[in-house]
Amino acid sequence: MPPYPTRPQVGIGVVLLRGDEVLLVRRGKPPAMGAWALPGGSQELGETAEDAARRELREETGLACGPLVLAGHVDSIHHDPHGRIQFHYTILDFAARYTGGEAKAGDDVTETAWARPEEFDDYALWDEARRIIRAAMSLLPP
Image (cartoon, one colour):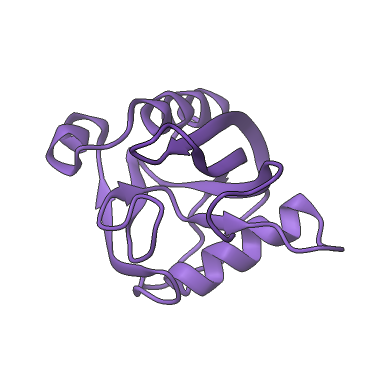
């Protein structure tokens, strides 16, 4: 998405659960470059939200997942130093169970990590990501 949009963009995220762990990725591009987050990205024209979730998970981590359940949504709005909206995403986050394979950083990420909730502070994980992860864990308990 180019900076200074004229309308929000649909983003898609995946809370991939493996037991009591969740897969995190380190963002390699703006917005939030260098931050740990859930795998995900922009939905493409003509693509369903679930297809976008599966594609983004595969592109960013090399992994596939089981059935998807909508866990919630997040509004991610980033302003520049002058207060103008530089990025605006409405993110639909899906919960899914890990089905196997080894996560490898790809596409727009530089690292992957499996983390437990008590480790989220180590990753400086965004409060909204934590909220969505809690919702996902309640929908798909271990």
